[in-house]
Amino acid sequence: MPKNGKLEFFYYRSHETGSYIDYHKHKCYELVYLIFGNGMMNLNGGTLH
Image (cartoon, rainbow, N blue to C red; front, side):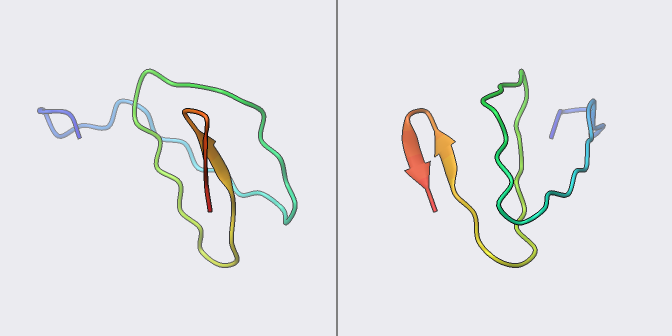
């Protein structure tokens, strides 16, 4: 959270089971929430389950 307490960018997206998201990057933090089920993520060359 920035020192001023304001979000400079907010985006919400929902994906279907089995979805693949192409490589991308940001100049900010990215928070990923799994509400149900499971997922896999590649972060800096490592795989997170």
